[in-house]
Amino acid sequence: MNNVMRKLLLITLALGFAVPAQADIQVPPGSKYNSTRKLGRAVSNILYGVIEIPEQIVRKNDSGGRQVGWSYGVADGTRRSFKRVGYGFYELLTFYSPTFHGTFKPPYTRCGADNRIEMNPRDGLSEFPPELGAESYFSHSRTQKW
Image (tube, rainbow, N blue to C red; front, side):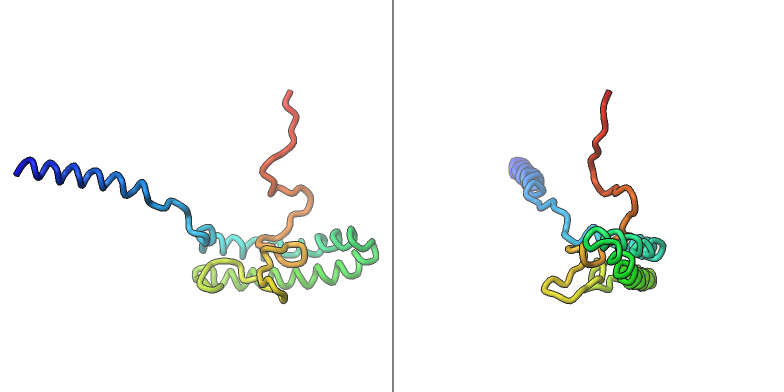
């Protein structure tokens, strides 16, 4: 009987160590979107949504000239600013519940084949407001080591 118990114990231990080795350790695709990120997105859109106006002035100025930047850039920036602040208040009121297709992803949509604006920040809203000046979303920098 002891011999049978030892064999069962060894088989159980062997299977116990083998099963976790085959487990899938990848993170689910939607795990980075949670209620805390949604709350942060809401606060940043409310506080910094106005930055869309100078951002669009600069972008339209680069693509079409000063007159385009100061006319169409102001109008487009104001529209985008109101849209971003509106989404900010919406997400602030609903940050605790998954509202966009049962997830906490941003609800920004646009007309076109690809209904996700976060994939195309050039002509749509990105997840967070733009930064003026230094662009800190780069993970590297060019520093001189002496």
